Length: 193
Length: 193
Ligand code: HEM
Ligand code: HEM
Image 1 (cartoon, rainbow over the protein chains, first blue to last red):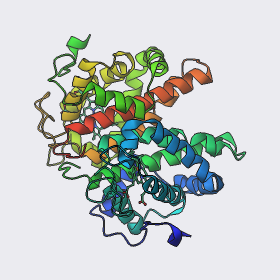
Image 2: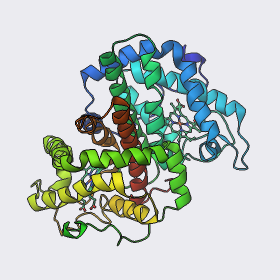
Image 3: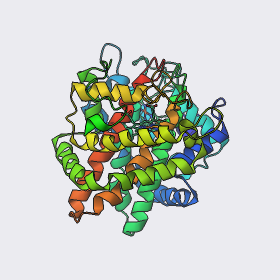
C-alpha cells in the first residue's frame, strides 16, 4: 500500500542527526512505555477505517484558519489543490505509522524527514508544489492540541471500555508530543535544540 | 504576594517580539476561547491550595530524570539546591498566572521572558545560579505531556462535575501548548519560528 502514496518516503529518508539516546530521553520525558505501544496498536485497529473521517476534521480545521491554509497556498494566497490532496494521503498513512511502526532508527530518520518537510529545507519538494516556503514552527507546536484532542471521539467509536479509550488517548497524546519535539530539530538554526 | 517571590518579573519584563496578531493566531490554533478562560478561572480556585502538591509531583519527575535534573545542576553535575527552591516558587505562581491572568500584552511579554529564562540568553540570571547554560528546547516541548497530564487528578479533587473537570483540563492543555509555542520564540536563532 505504501508504494501507492505519492511522495511518501518511509525507509528511504536520510539519517536523522538525532541519536537513539536523545530519543530515549524524550520517551522518558513523555512517559512513553510498552503499555503505550500496546495501546497504539489497538488505536491503529480502531482508527484504520476512520482515517478519512479524521482527515476530514483536520482538513476542515486547516481550511477554516487562514493562517494555516497559507502553508498550503501560493505566496500569492491561492490554495494548491493537488498539493493538499497529495499531502492528505501521507497524513493518513502517518496516523497508521504512529500506531503501528516500531519507534526505531528508521522511524527516527523519517521523523526528521517529516520535520524537514515543514521547513524551507524540505517543503514542497516531494510534490513539486509552488506553495509557501515553510510552515512556521510555532504553528506546528500549537497543532499538538487539535491533533490530539480531535482524535478522542474516534477512539471512542468502536465500543471499547473507558479505560482502553483512555489508554489509547494518552498514548496518542504522548506520541504526538514526542514527534513534534523531534520535528523541531529540523528547523534551521535552532542552536539550543 | 508576588513581591515575595524571588526573581519573579511579571509586569517588568521587556517587550516580547511576538505580536498580538501572532497571539490571536496561536489562540485559534489551540481553539482557545472565552469558555476556556472561564474554565481556567475555576481551575485557579481548584488548584490554589494544591499548588505545593502539584509541584511535588513535577519536581519528583524532574529529580527522577537525570536528563532533566541536569538543567538544575552545575555543568559538573551537582544539583543546585537554592536554585531549585527559588524556581519552584515561581513555578507555583505560574500555575496561578496561567489560570488567572488576562492573556494581554503584559502576559505576552512575560511569556517571552519565561522562554528566555530557558535559553542561554536568560537562564540563571534571576537567581545568580551556576547551573547549566540552557534547557534544550526539545525537552521543553516534551514536557507539555507531563505538565498537562499530571494536573488532571488535582482538577478532579474538589468535587466538580465530570464536564467541569473536562473543561478545566482542556483549557489547561490548550494554555500549556500555547505558552510553549510562545516560549520557543526566545530560542536563538529559530529563523522559521
Ligand atoms: C501536530 C502538528 C502537525 C502534525 C502531526 C503534522 C503532520 C504532517 C504529516 C504526517 C505530513 C506528511 C509527512 C510526509 O510527507 O510523509 C505533513 C505535511 C505537511 N504539513 Fe503538517 N503536521 C503538523 C502541523 C502542521 C501545521 C501547523 C501546518 C500548517 C498548515 C502543516 C502543514 C503541512 C504541509 C504544508 C505539509 C506538506 C509538506 C511538504 O511539502 O512535503 N502541518 N504534516
Ligand atoms: C511544559 C514545559 C515547561 C513549563 C511549563 C515550565 C515552566 C517553568 C516556569 C513557570 C518557570 C519559572 C519562570 C519564571 O522565572 O517566572 C521555569 C523555569 C525553569 N525551568 Fe521550566 N518549564 C518547562 C520545561 C522545562 C524543562 C524541560 C526543564 C528542564 C529540566 C525546565 C527547567 C527550568 C529551569 C532550570 C528554570 C529556571 C530558569 C531560570 O534560570 O530562571 N523547564 N519553568
